[in-house]
Length: 601
Image 1 (spheres, rainbow, N blue to C red):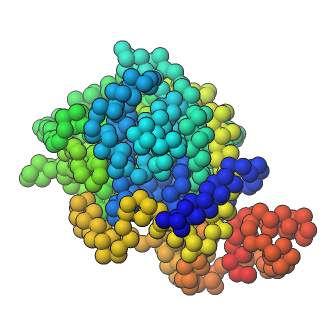
Image 2 (image 1 turned 180 degrees about the horizontal axis):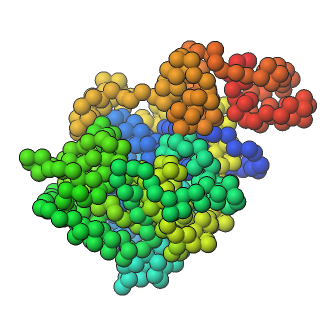
């Protein structure tokens, strides 16, 4: 335990350094594996990145890592929909805060009377909160106060490791008039979560993911990145104009994305009524605590009563990659099997039998409540708010009634390619992003660069020791047989037929290199940036895995210059090398070019 205290001091020094450095650095990409390595050390982390960069994937990897080592993790989110993506519950429910807007001593007293909260906080070692962009700042302060109280510990969040995840370019939190269900009425934006005292005291290490796993269209990526950068020039507007009132070439019509609930409900109801033929009804079944079941029913996007006819346009509302669908996959009901299971033909022409699935709220590995339903909802139209977290093949987007920063970005970033977008309306401010968020995001990117560089200085053996000590300190196990047994248990519980892990992304890159592909060709084929493929090469080299270098082209002049710079400076970090090359040797090169050349020195 004494060793762990030294490691905590060691990591704390890194965190203090990250906070104290005056940021003025070009950003360096952080990969999913690097972010996961940082999470495993036990430091507080804010995991962020653009839509489709893999934040939820990293969170799920970390949750699985903790569960298989018997470390208690509380999985929560700011909204019910986000919570169901990870079988968690809302942070409001987990902390017992509910709908409270303030927290006085009487409220604390009231919470302390609930024995289940004492048990919950006693077990938890890590608290994970997803989609924090939709959490008000004062609520994070309330969460911090409750954690300190139940943990009887005055460290931030009572000494729990806090993992926040989200993207502040997504839609902000809103307060709605209780008598009005429409999404643009009587709304007010509260203080953002990063302005709260709890955020500042949390000393969060920033992990800003840059790999892109949703969009595989480079021009579209440049459009989305332009919006995120606040630069709405011709390079952004011209490609979007080409999609104005343009038909999307798919086997199904694109989903209509609207800003208001009323438009969506009217369209879906009208389109279903148009279809002639026999209607099949599917009712949601539930198990568990009634109160939690009610929360779950309101959170999932599946309908309590789903009426389907042959010809109904639908979208899947859950991920099941083994069966070939994801949250947002579009299709049309083409038939019903003998047991009434709907048969869906997707927009890509695949045939899927849409059997019922479960959504659950879990705590400490136990299911508290679950609902079961066909994982479909009507897909003629959906609100932009509800589309968050989805990946759509195509969308017909009406931004003429946009009323909040980020609506245009959220709607567009749901779609995989520019060719999948049909714009039917545009408000003059639809593509605007919050100037405050824009400035803060730049700070986040720079702090992530520093985190990547500072943690890369820690020897791998030392990093692994710190990670193991954190597991032990959190009451977990390092016994190999126990971990493997837990992995099999988790796989069985999830109904995964083959528990073998999927091929790692960098190994897929290695295969393409070995077949003779160039970095540029591989990046295009996989829908990644040049820098992401370079990061795969760095990982391959780090793990001692050989790969074909025959088609990797490096400027000989740059290679020679980097060799000289390494000798002259004694540095391997990117920023000093780039500065030395530019100032002393008059050589201009990008970070990615330097990273690639550095591999061969």
